[in-house]
Length: 155
Image (cartoon, rainbow, N blue to C red; front, side, top):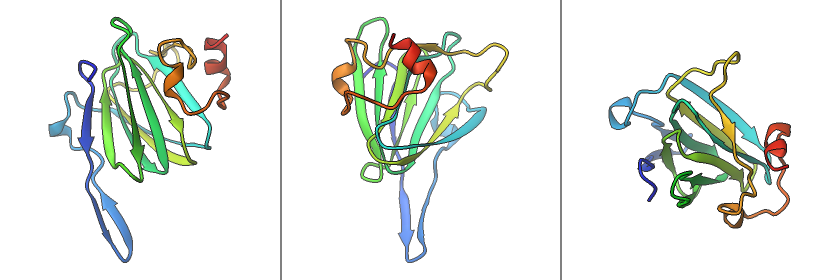
């Protein structure tokens, strides 16, 4: 496992109405979170790889569907990947110094808890191409749907 990355089990409590799940408990995290974001991604989307120059940490959780999380230790080149979501309800803590991203293996709803608030005037994100030689073999797709920023990183 890459230094600082943690996989945290999430428990679903289901009944005839649906299910309930606690997404985070601050006392169990290495650092408190300050902002929560939710995204919807269509199958085949890759978001990332990004890392945080000033060290923002992320807690990833897939709320619906299945996501492949990919983490790259930029210093050692070590990689970590895990499929999370419907079949594997876990959250993944990722120290911001590591490049990280995810692929939508199905249409999905994804949640990011982060340790710093986003600053549009001075964003703390840097990109690494999704098809960097250290990680390109970890994705299930060879032709992902990318944002313009992620596409530029791959150029």
